[in-house]
Picture 1: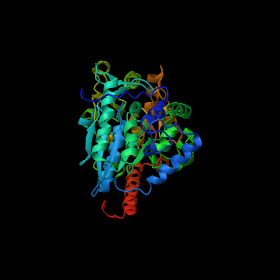
Picture 2 (picture 1 turned 45 degrees about the horizontal axis):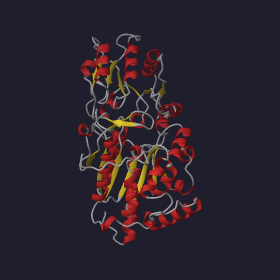
Picture 3 (picture 1 turned 135 degrees about the horizontal axis):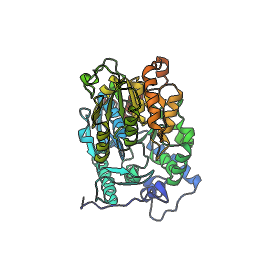
Picture 4 (picture 1 turned 60 degrees about the vertical axis):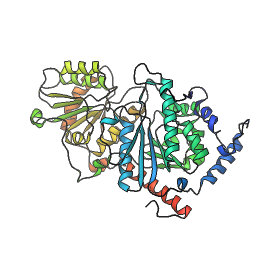
Length: 474
């Protein structure tokens, strides 16, 4: 790390657009840039942007590559496990297709412990942690965030130059963590113009007003217009209209594709192996099992503490509880939960599980926060569910929980001082109630990973046909 030149890319005032101009000014082709060029007027930006996109199509394979198309999946992974799980679900589908070489660029601190698809190339990035809505810190104590961020940015740029990806699919953050991929995006337009750049956007990011304000401050809409060829929404327009909610308009809106929610393939296969849940049937002793999970667990303590207090207000032996604290919960918080659960034969505390699917399938009721992946997986598994959304720093989970509750797919409870009492009332009611009907479950489109893979395959086939070498990527 000492040999890396650190380039601090301030993502504060001026936003992504201001940083982006260092490598490529919004609204013009980087190949037209010269020292001292003025910032073009809005009408010129539109004209030059259209001209750039015209030059980029039809696309040709990067450097005339023969063999599998190289796909980069960028996943910044600043908190929790959601980004990692979503990208692994997409990677698995791409690898099953047999025509892609898939590279995952991830900042997840638990990637080495995770079950990975065969053939996936993993490039770890030094982990960071989110400390606020748009602020971050190095995960390892004593490390400078500026140094870690500069190293990550340099590593991403180096990998892109080395492998020259045919497709660069960015998860969630158009500018990357704190703007770290802006140099790579600018370089691709300048030096790798044949790379097709795509943004994979989960449907609900925050309240629409907050997203619009943040995107305006950081100049995200110009970045979407000029840096991205496709915007893939991991959701359904009927459930949440991203274009309308976030103010995406014009040619950018025309490049938006709704793919459906992304879940692991095994959840959609009726013949998939059931696997072994993370609890002992002997300990459950015939009681209904309630699984409590909060993804990585970094912010799950309040929910789990309230759940344990709620159990003490329920009839003894009403259920068997399995609490998965997660790999990112602090040692002190886990110790506090262990002390609260001491002496209870009907409670299992589990550190973490790398394959949650067998446990999700086997549970009678799941209590979880309302992250994108967890919510979609629970609906795919058709589980009775109580969602307790994270209250801050974003409204994302609250919006998702209430949308799904209105569809009749889950029960939703807000966190608050009375959470233990509300859980004590809701758990017996949820266990006694019939599950939603098949018609209700079908309201959520869960074929996102398959459609993403199909979209990437179509893009590669179009390149091959345009360059007259059809079949080389088959």
